[in-house]
Figure 1: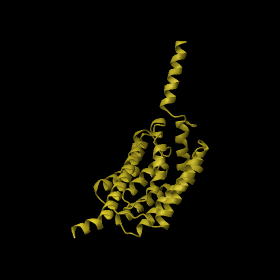
Figure 2: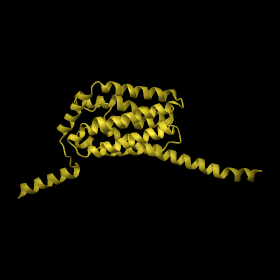
Figure 3: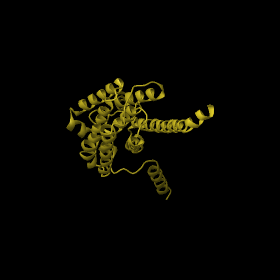
Length: 247
């Protein structure tokens, strides 16, 4: 009786602390292994795309915004098809939903950034520049290094081009977007930041806590841009009346 009560208590505590997953941590990392072996040397190309995007942002030419968005859109389409549909769906049926949402995000980035040209990028200082640089550095270098320290050995580890490091990279690049920034391009990355960060605790991928930091910085940026936009609108609205008053 006493042992049964203890077992029930522990089970309830475990369920309360860890959301139910349709797969084990071992299966999760085995998917990374199958993916990394199957797509090699795509990882080299994906990292080269990331480097090209950083170079384009650092140049800051208006025409480069379309190319940066094309790279981001390609990365999100890759994650949808090459990871969620092709590999993750084998152990998690929700991957079909995740992949569908990622494809929507890719298409929207291409539409807003490539077709409409509403996203331009420029390297800058201040908190946005430092935050963006930190997120990019984390996604490309710190993330895999932390994985190694935590015992995640390649190929059974998340490489760049997989959802979590690439989402952090995406939000790092978006920190350099010039105002006005369409808030809609943040929707899918923020959704994955909320979903993907659960792996930090439930599956021991503690480097995924970087998703929470990236999401918090993105929300802070959106709030700041909204506040700045409202201030500009007030100045524009008050401009004619204040000038007439001074005259």
